[in-house]
Image: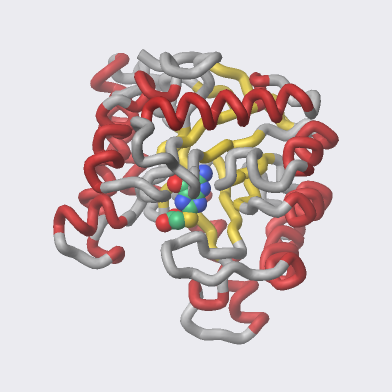
Length: 287
Ligand code: 7PJ
């Protein structure tokens, strides 16, 4: 049901993907993500939050310094660096030992983050924004999560076809930079320029759209946590969307997803472990 992949990471053990779901904990370092302002507080809270997520079972910590939510303002390179770099430095200094991914579409931010210790690029522009992004990934030999977000979608083109063409270009861009397809993880980009119906169609047909429809059966990341595809259905606020998020995580897993980008690590992980035992049998009892 799940394809197997071994994703090399520079200077550390590879990330193995298959039946065991991997959890990516979201660490936002936008000024509004912590209530108490102040630079020092923000840094301490970010490190504490990362530690909590790791204790809860996060396999990856995803650090983002620019909100890509609808209506959010873009930030400049320096501002984004000022937000994320101290946090990466602090996590490395604190001995955080899970891979760090950098959620950015800016090559300079990715470059600096990797030099400081990040080992995965999470690019919401799927390597199709700044041309240098693929070069940065190839230079350091880091994998890229390539998300679908086509701001110039032709309404006459079905989403499945748009995704195939988009990811064909992602793969071509990667290969031109010397980054093999073995370094790519695909992400349908839930909520990014998609209707409610399209979001649920993608979830229902996840690997049909992302693996059978594209050139290689690449691993798949699912990012639905607290998103409006849940809130629009339930009429609730982001803080009330955990149960809905868990439903999407489990369905995304049953439909072949490998990595789950979530705010609430423990509940999603618990649900996914139960889902794994259901599909593949419980792990052997030890001791
Ligand atoms: C995603 C992301 C996603 C990946 C955001 C939010 C919006 N990166 N960054 N996939 N979403 N790869 O978390 O609500 O779905 S920001």
